[in-house]
Image (cartoon, rainbow, N blue to C red; front, side, top):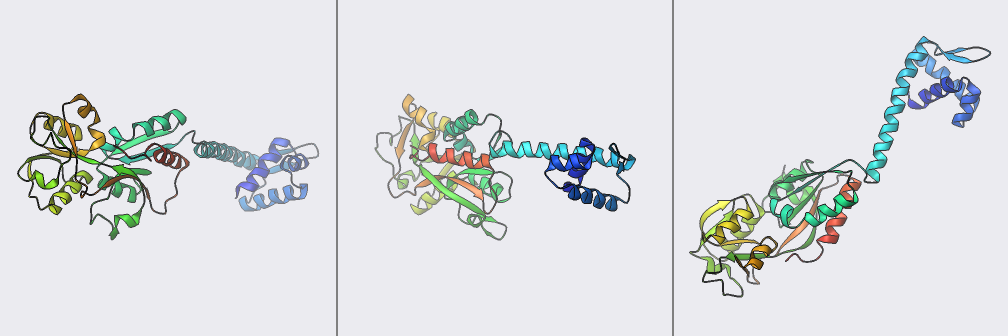
Amino acid sequence: MDWNKLEVLLAVARQGGFSAAARSLGKTQSAISQAVLALEREVGQRLLSRSARKVRPTQAGSLLLEHAEHIEAELEQAARKLSALREVRGGRLSIGTSDTLAYYALPAVLGAFRARHPDVELVLETRPSPATALALAAGEVDVGVITLPLPRGLRHRDSAIERALEIEPLCAQREVLIAPPSHKLAKRRRARIAELAGEPLLLLGRGSAGRDYVDRELARAGVRPRVVMEMNSVELLKRMVELGFGLSIVPALAVEREVSAGVLVALPLSASAEVRRIGLAFEARAAHSRAADVFAALCRSVLRAPVM
């Protein structure tokens, strides 16, 4: 049984005859009759009782019509939901990103999306950028906003993670050395990684893109780090630096408030330091929902300027 034949059966039952059903469906009466006969052959039973006055469903026909009406209702509901997805009036969008980007870079994007498409369910899943990249490759989230570059050697199954993703760099993300105003480096205009030798360092935990970046820069400068604290929160890192426990390297966008308040000093790193970027990422070759495309367009618009 296919839907076209069931649709004909519904029309005949509702219109009370073959000719009326033909007119309602824009078909010939012969085509209507052939469809009903084919359906009766398939089920092995008479579905319609034909009389001079009116066509009525048999017991088998009534049973099949009941199910056909359910199918019709499900198809109509599916069509409405598909239309809502196309017009971004419903559905669900899962966004993978890091705590830092969710807190400092994405509020304007998320606010704009919510204002324009309030009926879309937004799910924000926060992980370090490498874990977000792996979740994207596994199809666990729809779109990712991550910090680039990803750690070297990060793999999905048997290949480099970059092959499993479509990655689009958006804007620069400057890193700064943060220190309390009383620190000896606080009066400097710029910091060199080599100057951190022997300094107590507060760093993000291993496995994050931020920690991978700092480790690379320290190794490139030949500095053996003196790490006194590790934590998974940039907010906690800032607070511990403010209290004088050591120095740290964080994205500049994360310390604007503290620098303005005068409780922390942020020193740009020397020009030799690697430049990181904020990027969009999708699972390679996966179909994007309309909501994901709209979110990506907002990211490009809001985050196209360099993030300070």
